[in-house]
Image (cartoon, rainbow, N blue to C red; front, side, top):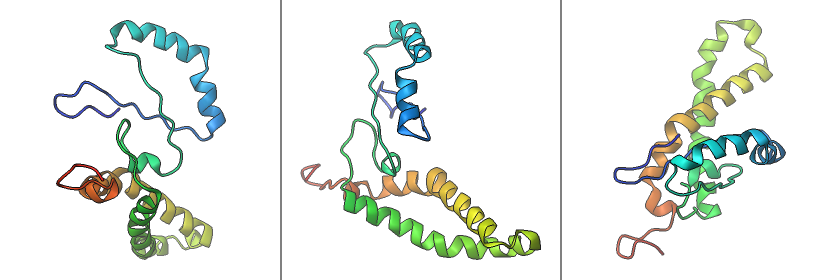
Length: 145
């Protein structure tokens, strides 16, 4: 759950599903409908559902302007490329301690886990805030382009 910024009342809950079919099954499920029925009396307004596939969950905030695809690409590339060089190099000494782990598949998996973890929990939340003006095409004078 993402708490709202100071003064705002809108909370954001992010759910991840492995397939769009599983997401749709949850959205249409009886269990979800029962839970919504229980919580609705406590809401100021009905909830909204936004479906964001792919990298969009890193690059846009619900209810706000979406980043242009070419800017999303450049932003992700600017993080993934250096990580794809640095993370394997950093993991090599650790993997060398366990010779049985020095298999391409194990090294690639370990690197992927580290890169995705760094991207999701550490780098992208901070990086997207720092470059939000460029990412979302905002100008200092008018607020938006």
